[in-house]
Image (tube, rainbow, N blue to C red):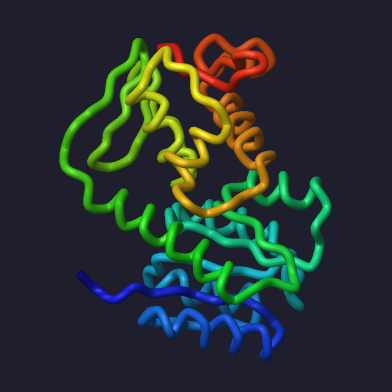
Amino acid sequence: MPAVKVLVIDDEHKIRKLIMMSLAKEQYFVDEADSGMSALAKLKNDHYDLIILDIMLGDMDGFDLIRKIKEMKISSPIMVLSGRNDDHDQILGLGLGANNYLTKPFSPAILCAYAKVLIRDHQHLKFKTDTNLEVGIFRFDVNNFRLYKSDVYIELTSRECVLIKFLMENPNQVFTKQQIYENVWDDVIIDENAVMVYIHNLRKKIEVDPKQPKHLLTVWGIGYKFVG
């Protein structure tokens, strides 16, 4: 398997070096960029298994950078680092397609734990065997990790893909938030609001009326289930 490559984007030299040293211990190849424009130039010419970016960059807002990365059709998972920890910023970052949101100051060990899961998920997507999951009008191409509704492609983030795949493998079954954590996020501890954010984002993409969902349903007091 080729070496894992990570791009760290932060305009603070000390932060970049701390992250790079932590990830290098995991035998990852780590590249760096000190600005949004520098990062975009690297992303045009190379592939990365994980992108770690700061929201507050000198030349560009990190949220704008996420938008540009998604416009480039880059599927690499994105981990956001930020000194801003309010709910609005976290929901915005995840809604734009980031896979994780870690606030500063952060533990290098926790950052590495999150990185391992995101990288594993990304590689898992790339090496799947050819098969399809079909539930009602939905079809999930497991080989390419692409979701279709009535044969129309729906663009999802890598974490949204893992979540919808899990639910489609178990249609009509109700899962608690804890069960979703265990099966989608594995052993990494996250804010329980994250599942709600991902469910909300999925509904916006797959439902005709996200406020009155017909497929991704809330079972009050228990959790969620998927109905084709």
